[in-house]
Image 1 (tube, rainbow, N blue to C red):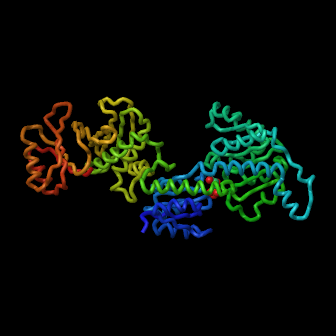
Image 2 (image 1 turned 45 degrees about the horizontal axis):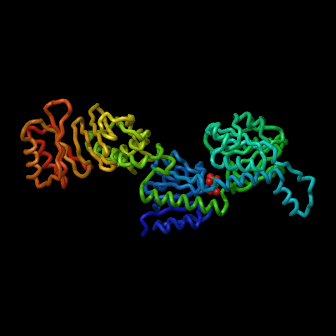
Length: 532
Ligand code: 3PG
């Protein structure tokens, strides 16, 4: 039986399916047009990942049906507005998409709609089919010399800009994320949204659907467009207020509009726009080319396979950090280990965690925080903690998280990770670690005691009065209880205070009797056993 199972809620290319199959991953396809209830029932059978295109809504109910086994949703395409990312994050499900694979197809389809609309291609073909030969009725408009207004110039918008320029159009762009240098390089002119609306002969939308962009083109903005202008939406349904668009087309204020996407897909029967002579539409075909489907199917399968096999969350769009530089990855593992030690050491619920990292080259400490929270909370959290939901799980438990970074370590180490926890009531513990030679983890501080120890295996932390003979007595107590000591380290605090810490690495776990015998030694202040 395959180790991993992936549910294909929407079909993907055979090349994508082959990635799963060749990787020994079972890929099961939902039947075409399956109802939401059937999808939920399937997910409850246990799948590690699910693949969707725009036809499937991965809402909170669907996602919840899949957990705890469901760990990732892969969108074979770019738009993720059909995935409830907030719910996925809450449930610890990674969301991935493939923003590149269908860029060209979507840009070409935008241009196809532009031409189709300007030259009445669908309408004239329909008339011809009806046996007519109407030439005057379908007099069109040239694109050359006209102004194309792009709302958004990301991947697809940039391609459209280049194609439109090749046709001889002047391209205006409204996009707060595009710099003047980028605009100059692309040969476009940046402007405000109002200027775009006022000057565009054709307005084309290239922004994702978010709360901020919903109904971006509403009645008020349509009114600001030139008389006789045209609109193309090959991006997302919901960006255009369809009722307002209907009015603008019916009144003749707009000469034409072309939509590839609708508020509701498929649009309800008898949708008023479909009856208008100056309206052109396709059924969400922007990415529907053999090339794009092959690319997105393959790319999402590769991402999901990698994720399932490595638990590497870097491709997820709902993790709260950017990529971690390769060199600093051992610190992520160390952070998790320190979190796990704290979890076992803490005498009660943790109320605050403060993590600081000193060292050059890591400006985003969040992956370490997530890893540390995973170590701290995984064992006590139903459904587990991962990089996607770690911050959320901390919030739910009322843990105040503080993070800080400093470039140059005061310690002399190349990097120093320090994790302090506070319990309700104010008591707490501090652990600090470093990575030697880029790969060897070292525990270098335990509650202010200096150390140098690999945090691995069974550790016995033994705080004692700093007087002669304690080490001998504790070691012999461990020995007489039949335990083998693999390693031992002693540490003192910088300020002399008559206390010391001994850390024993044991070959096997000490039982309660052994721990009680150690606590009974008069010089012993405290004993704690943890598994690192
Ligand atoms: C996308 O967001 O990638 C496109 O809208 C394509 O959607 P589709 O996968 O349903 O064709």
